[in-house]
Length: 46
Image 1 (cartoon, one colour):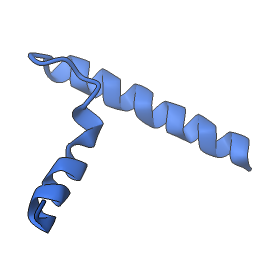
Image 2 (cartoon, helix red, strand yellow):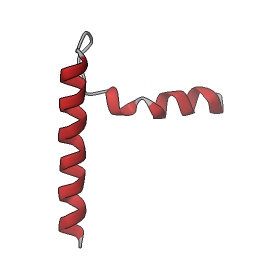
Image 3 (cartoon, helix red, strand yellow):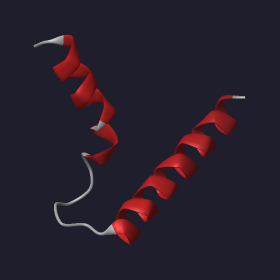
């Protein structure tokens, strides 16, 4: 796999859990929930 192809795939991994055909609202909600969960995980590590 070329570096460009690997970069392209890794840059869109955050969309893997979103169903095909999802709209802007669903994507925004998914990303917000994911950021919140990551933030909570960081706080627990401190």
